[in-house]
Image (cartoon, rainbow, N blue to C red; front, side):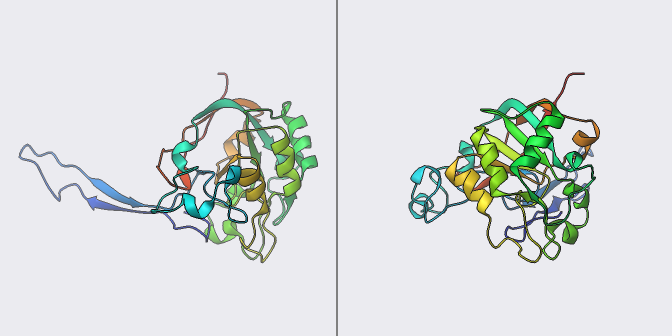
Length: 245
């Protein structure tokens, strides 16, 4: 699958195939080995994921917190299960396009326009899902990662708009969540600092947003239950948007 060049990718292989071992009654079983980074596929960033000037969120010493091969503070096991109000901010639709331009920066004004379109604005404890339309390229890893073209995503201005509303998490349909200019790659990620380090807001990446967009999703019940991987910097999650039948 497509993934960030900064993180180990996903690998799965069958360790046992049907017929490799057959029980006396004819039964057989198959199983697999999975190897993956914590930031591959749809996942939530733990607060241990990013530091600034040597400090994690809340002024925690990053070097001290990671001694012993796992994070003893802000690890993925501390990411709370999220059953809360969600707001779907379809920025691409607010611009009247299927996909935002490569390298486009999502601003506070864009988020406000998308919120007006959704008929709801995120608030304290909410999850804000931001659609750029870039997820349509997920099947083409090179295009999706977009090192040469750039990738649309959140600006610091937009991140501050979300932080002011005291949300608990925010996600998008790209590999890095934030704006990636053409040719820049993942050299600097200031939005991660604003959200994770400065404000303790979790980031969800690689979200599948197209069905939600086609359904005209606005306000919904968000259910995010990441795996509790002790000491990790991120965890896989399957986000669900629950809406009335």
